[in-house]
Structures are given as structure tokens and as C-alpha cells.
Amino acid sequence: MPIKRNLGAVVASLRPGMNIYVPGVSGESLAFYAELQANPEACNGVRFIGAHFPGINHSDYIGLHGAALQRNYFMLSGLRQGFSSGRAELLPLDYQGIYRDLAGMDDIDIAIVQVSPPDEHGICSLGPCQDFIPAVWRRARQRVAHVNASLPRTRGAFRIRWDEIDIACDAQWEVLSYDNGAPTELQSQIAAHVTDLVRDGDTIELGIGKIQSAIISSLKSHQNLSIYSGMVMAPVLELIDTGVIKGPDSIQIGVALGSADFYQRTAEDPSFFYRPVGDTHDPCKIAAIANFCAINSAVEVDLFGQVNADSINGRQLAGVGGLPNFVQGARMSEGGRSVIVLPSMSDNGRFSRIVAAIPSSCNTAIARQDADYVVSEYGVAALRGLSVHARAEALIAIAHPEQRDHLASAWSTMMAGL
Image (tube, rainbow, N blue to C red; front, top):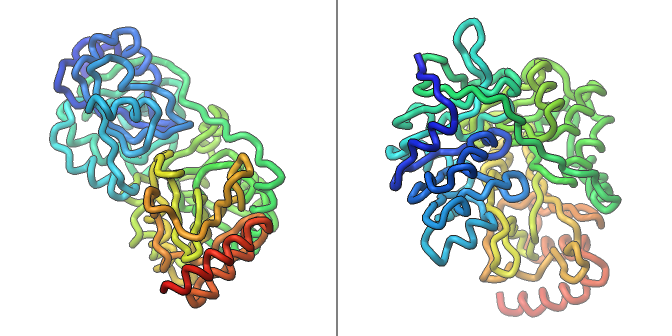
């Protein structure tokens, strides 16, 4: 049976040189972070490990103490500041790579996991987040559960038994919430072009963002859709409530992001079933799903069809996430396809997001041979089966009209050198 303590006592037990796993996204224990803030000296020399996302997770672990360290897989503002002092590690891995990295760690001293109170069978739920927790839970030297009565009891492939917890800390606390905001007219225009690329009976994957929310709303006339994805947001309820998605386990996900009400709905509705990254982002498991349609955003696409997903002018914004895994799985799926969505111009209207060539200072997340469809507000570039020149022409046709002559001229010069 676990030892009962409070989270403050766990924080007080930290020592320099320790490695502490702290979950990200909606699995992050905000109560544990609050205790760290209350006792920053305990973070001296401690390394915090986890997959935390810019714009979703706002806790600054490396900023807790001048000697705190952090190992992460996505760029964070605090992480950037820790590079010069050697206190920050950034690993350029996709989701499958992150899972393998965490699963291979034998030196995690404490794993902090947020769970629901145990049921009558002594089973605790992980609520709206399973993602990477199974990779580290049973390998950690000490397993600490933040038992949060506010966490809904969801159904999932991975559960935690009460008797495998070393320390249980009761603390009713708010669960991390996320407000994606309403899509703009431009984003709705992009979504309208995606609608025809999704077929009745498809299993779809969508990343997070306003374009993805608009795409979900545009699919309400479809039939018999399913979702197999890393994350989902509250707009997916529109597809359940209109009967587009129906049936037990028709939405299989690693993480839900939204409000407390949305999290509770995912617990009560049998449509939802949670899985770890080892399932959701396994290209072989994705490939076994016929008619799998992966829909993801990008920063820019060049005229070869290469995709940059996480950097601007060499400055990394986040990480590639699960994009490579879903694209690979979709291309191996019978009837599968991959869709990349992006506006034609940057938010300030100064730069084209369809470029002649991805700069050498930026990172390529998807190679040219993996591009199927690219969608902007100006239409769809269907690249599969096209020659190098025809692909460039198709991409130029969906660029902003003011950028097309420049792109055509640049392509002509590039063609001369091929």
C-alpha cells in the first residue's frame, strides 16, 4: 500500500542530482508545480524531464531555481534561456522517438503522475492524458501519485493500480485547461478545401489548432467517421452530437485538451478511449487502419513538397511532434492519405508560407516524397504521382496571388540547376 504524504513533503525530499519526471499537456500536476514554487530551494540541482508544450504548458521548471535543469522535446521560452548556461536539453525527436527515449531511462528517481482516486477494484485512472506516462511509470525508482478528486475517471489502455503507488498525495486541484479560440474566416476557408479530401468511413487524425477546429466543424455532413489521434479538442463533440462519429471507442486518443466539462464528457461518453503514445503514434498500427487520413499543420512548404513544421528563420518554435509518425502511417494505410494545411501568408502578411526552398537554417519534418496533399485558402495541391515540375506548379497555384510570379521565377532558376 502507498505511503500517504502531501506534495510539499515530496518537494522537500528532492536533492541535487535527482531526475524527476513531470507529465505535460493536460496530465501536468499543477498542484505539484505550485509546491515547487513555494519551495524553490528544493529545485537546486534537480533535473525535470517531460514533454511540455509551448502555449499549453506554462510552468517554467528551469526558472524555479538558478541551478535547476530541464530535459524537454519541444522548445519553451524558459528552455531557450537555459541553453547558454548548459541547464537545458532539447532533444529533436518525434513522438515515437520521445517515447523510446523515456522508456530507455533507468535513472528517473521520481515519477509524478496525476490520477483519480482508486475505484472499488483499486484502479486509478489517468484522466484526460495517457501519452508518455506508461513509458516511465514502472521504471521509476519512486512512483508518486497526485490523487486529484477533480480528475475524471476515463477509460484507457493503461491504468495504475493503487498497490503499485509508492507515495500517494491527496490534493484536489484544477486540471490544466486549454482554450483554442474560435477559427477565423481565413482558417474556415482552408477547412472548406479539406472537407472534400475526407471520405465517409475514414479514420482521421488532426493535430491541435484553430484550423483543425474549423475542419471538424466542416465535416458535419459526413458519415461514419472515426478518430485515431494524439490529441483532440472539444469541437469533436459536434461530430458525436450530429451522429457523424458514433459507437464505443470510435475516438481513440492519447490526450484531450479543453475545459473541465469536456474532460468529464470524455469520461462519460463511451466514444472515447485513451491510449499511450506507444499505440497512437505507432506507424505500423496506423497503417493497419484502412482509409486513414492524417491532417496536420505546417509552418511552410517548399516547391519540392518538403515540409517545415517547427521553425522560422532558424528559430525553433516547438518540435515536430507526431507529424512524421502519422504521415508515415497514413501513406502505408490502404486508401490512406496525408494532408498538410497552412495559410498562404504569415500572420503579419509579410512572408509567403509556400516558399521556393526551405532555408538551410530551418528543419525539414517531412521529406518531399511523403507529401500527398497541401491545402491553403486558395485550394488543394494534389502532389501524389506528379513530376517534380508539376508538383511545383501545383504548389504555386495555391500560393498567394501576389507571390506566384516570384515563386515561378525562383522555380525556373532552380530547374536550370537540377
